[in-house]
Image 1 (tube, rainbow, N blue to C red):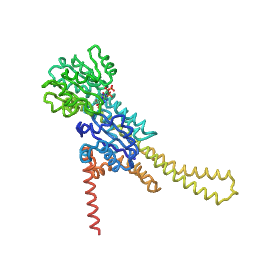
Image 2: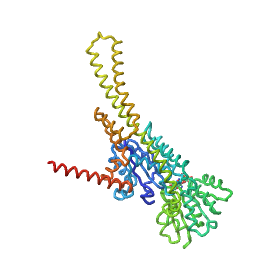
Image 3: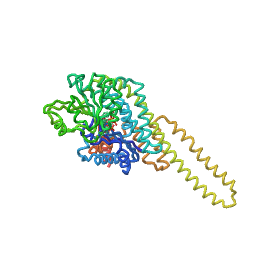
Image 4: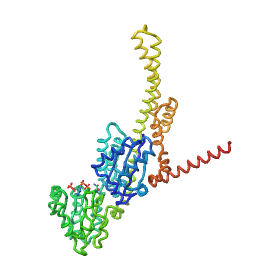
Length: 484
Ligand code: NAP
């Protein structure tokens, strides 16, 4: 079995595209079921956050499965393949595993080291457990990624004093407005992000904060947590009147439709009334047409990149330390995956020998006829079993304890060939996992270059590998010609 990841993130796609591919929680189960209907996909998990949509799949044929995930994404987003492909990246085998560990640790976040992503990966892990029964590969992968991220957060300083999307949004507003303490601030939403916005705004000196939310009870609950700061709360019906009297509005809801657009704002605001909107939601809560209003300034999550650049620099060293931990855990996961496949080949071999033993025993017993007593039959059966077990014992111990990955791979390959074992997908994935950049990644770079863009760094390496494969093929061709 192989692991593949097809997705897009804040590094490869702007918010206008990311919002089209955002999969809300209530649609995840259905999306997983749809993905698993594809012929080459065995397991699927979806990590959908404001900064990324990543689909992890366990597949029996890697290049076809990557195409199938891309097909699913085109269908879901209603974007033609030609428009979508430039934003997608594909990672395979250990590249995909390592990526998830980095994501969970906050190393791939817009704000390096932020902690909210770990909660989102944990949530995806819960969904994986819910929708993929039994001891499945993605289950173990997400479990390992969560463990690794916790290790990274406790054994490095990556999370200490880290900023988050909400603190970066407040910082951006602080840079853009003259005096935060004099601003009338409205926050739309009363969820996690809204709570963090209130915290950061208060710590930066904001004094006039109103919360407006769909469920007024939740808005009240949030406002009560900050009663000392005089935070007010309102139902969503008051949205436009609050916006009309605000200087600064933050939007942070999970609504899939814009809550504010040009027409609504034009109707609510006085001509030339200035307003600043900071929208940290994905899908966006503020329609793009608001940019056409000359006195309204709109910022979205992608605009936070400038604010976080400085933070990234100071965190680079910590990120290097984190990468070393990730490498250790990546190897541990690879060992688990290999042992799983070693067991599969061993059980295949055992089944084959057992079948031979049973057939031969049956033939022998039928030749001996009914005179052959039952207790003798049992003794012969036990004898044949012991012979099989003794023959298998030593090679199995050797296989299980073999630390040299390459040697183990060769032994398994030889076993498969010598005994003609019917486990082709196990072998191919095993080969792929053991190389530092799987050959499948190289192949997919060649075959799917029009299907999905392989992560640029990997693609460069893949291209080099391809070139060397092509050179090798050319040499073979020249030799063949000169021989004939
Ligand atoms: P959350 O805790 O689940 O809260 C969701 C909020 O959205 C609630 O206030 C909810 O109102 C409101 N809401 C949901 N559907 C709505 C609708 N149709 N109309 C109006 N309000 C609606 O979510 P969150 O983590 O705060 O995330 C909010 C937004 O920020 C999302 O777009 C997310 O992508 C983005 N974001 C999240 C993170 C993160 O790390 N979590 C980081 C950056 C950006 P009720 O109380 O009435 O249900």
